[in-house]
Length: 81
Image (cartoon, rainbow, N blue to C red; front, side, top):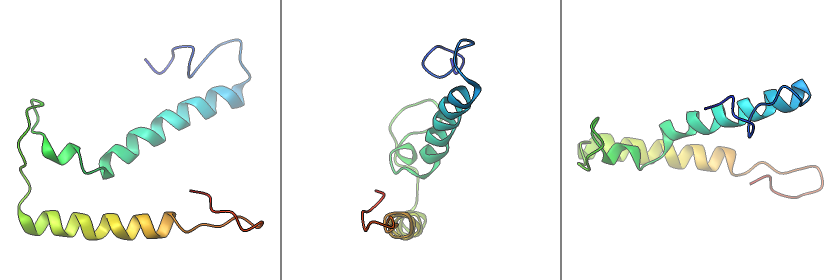
């Protein structure tokens, strides 16, 4: 699917193809940090399988990432996110 025209085209400059593919890969990486996936088991059925301690640690780390990457400011004073 990644080689479909939305992300890749032989008629497009390489930098655009690379950008589209890296965008999609970056999106997939962030799915490892969302809080929705932990609510489903391997067959796709809903079942909250984390114990409370694991869930608390996950939330603590998620807040840390949000604070780290949510506070970048451009030279003109605008926030990136």
